[in-house]
Image: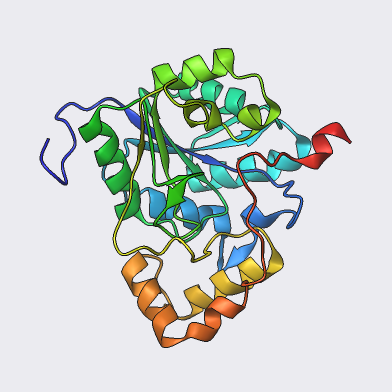
Length: 261
């Protein structure tokens, strides 16, 4: 396959945005306002611009607190599937089945700077390479900012993980079973150049939200600005990076401490 293309009659590719109200460090963050729109709406709007995606949907929980997420999605005309709070792998699997996905793209609702071009790049590399799983961030490396994370797998691989994964972190973080043991699946780390892997553009704390709001304020009336434009902004205003510089990023083996509380 040539660069920048996806197979003709490609498998049905569905992006599932993981979203819930009960964040431990910033409760209700997925519906927090960013320049006049809830964060989840920002993520969905940007994801919908990815030309490799056939459908964008939200995977939330059956908990009462997430009724607000489901209601918001209904108001926006955004499909929503509801499932387990802590077994997010099961939530994804059931949503993928319901939506008849053949390829699943995992996105999260705390990434309101997600770049459709980066989603396309990762999906295209998944198809080009013929692997079971491709991602632009893995425990052993990343070159995209934290907050542009995109994971792609075949439904068959997701189904096998759903059947076999046993560790709590594998169930909560959805995809680790696909990459945490060498040789279990065919895995591809999708890199980009230059390397911006040290930048943090996700929202997990009040400081993160302050930074993202500052970025959107620099592009008034727009939500289609690119990664390159944001990088240029940070080069012009390096002090922006200080807003959330002290935040420690969670790892894929961290689990929600409340599941055992």
